[in-house]
Amino acid sequence: MTGLPASVGVGFKPDHFTAIRNDARRVDFFEIHAENYMGAGGLPHAQLTALRDDYSLSVHGVGLSIGGQRGLDADHLQRLKTVCDRYQPDSFSEHLAWSSHGAEYLNDLLPLPYTQETLQTICDHIDQVQEVLGRKMLLENPSTYVLFEQSTISETDFLKAIVQRTGCGLLLDVNNVFVSCTNHGQDPYDYIAAFPMTSVGEIHLGGHSTEELPSGPLLIDAHGSPVADPVWSLFSHVIGQTGALPTLVEWDNDLPDWPILAAEARAAADILAQGGARLDLAS
Amino acid sequence: MTSHHETLAAFDRALTGGPLPKGITALDPSEAEQRFNVYRNNMMVSLTEALNARYPVIRRLVGDAFFGAMARVFIEHHKPTSPVLQEWGKEFAIFLDRFSPLKEYPYLGDVARIEYARGVAFHAADAEPIAASTLTSANPETLRMGLHPSVQVLKLRYAAVSIWTRNQPGFETYPIGHSGEIALVLRDRIFDVPVAAISPAEAEMIEALRMGRPLASAAASGSLKDPMFNPQPLLVSLMQAGVLTEGSPKT
Figure 1 (cartoon, rainbow over the protein chains, first blue to last red):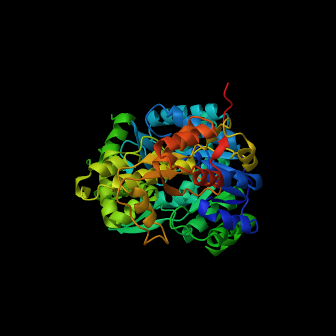
Figure 2: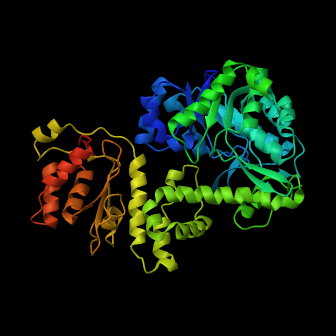
């Protein structure tokens, strides 16, 4: 599906560079946010060039606004191509979300209604991305906090239709599944049952935060804490179905020291190695 | 039926003060506004964090609370125009110059100019430094060098270099100058981005080097500014930083 190894990786943070180089090999791949490597030179490129020699690489875009209004930012797509040409990543992925409107970049992954209109727009955008980059991309399911009355298609059916029309793969963010399903009163195991699992090329795990509202918890995809227990259980359930898949732990805020992040990756690797069985028995 | 464009436009307006867009709902519809606030908060917090990362000395000088409130005003008027956030925020210096609550602190804009330039230097293109042997063995009358793309010279109205320096760890007693300073910002061999105050003659020589003038001629242009000008210390520090590069051959 992708060239990423069916083992574990973490989101690369420059603060961890020295610790990674001085440590034994703890992960098999790193993922970077493409937008952080769009400068011309300097330390970011020196670090990534050094890591690229030893590890598989996933380039993950956060700013292309695939779910935005018709017409991708051609300049930004070209910048993504420059990053991909330079580092020849084993996978490129982006989000089912939008982040720009008009001339403004809003710096967040914003939700969209799922309709025939948005489906067509997104498929056209993905066709364009895959053509310009000359590679197949993975599309990630989002964390969402609100719903749209306009939506006529379920998220899983929407993703299925995108895969069928564009041939892209999917990045299954298990934390996002748990966050969105909790926020919208759905069963995350039902979501997983409806998810087009054969198209999954990578899995994301990450931490979320919780706010209590009168109707129940509001989960926020904060990437600033360990992976929560119910997300580990859901991940184990997924792996029980699919077997080992490239699995990435994301931790972007309140960054821990490298050994703590490496231990999260180790925990994911244990589940991959056991085919998801152990936690399934425990839960 | 609302078009996708209209849906996004209403969502965008709602992020910065507009009403909850039509059609936005939640499991318990009475909580739609509270849930939508996650998006309002995400945008403001993440952009404030980006500004904070770019302007740490400004934040230190005005304090966290003031910085946060000021960032909100700046963000509302100067949203990023591209997803490459390292290119965002250049207008912050002019914003500070004009922000009336800060009119007693007119030097802040110049401090911000230094901080923005440091980010530019950090991400500037790479260039191979010239070998020390080339510099020492060549004829200064004919040796043409280039400058690393990170090198920037900022002529500032206020003593912003010394203010910036005093706000670095270990420099808390650094003396503040009394008049405008010229900042030299560059990225050195180990990717640090130091800031130094240079003289008008040194600034003149750097600009002459940038224009591809031969070494002796560039030094002479410094001497025009200051008859006592000694180019040696500047050349040594540029050489040590690794920002003197092979010049493009003149045809």
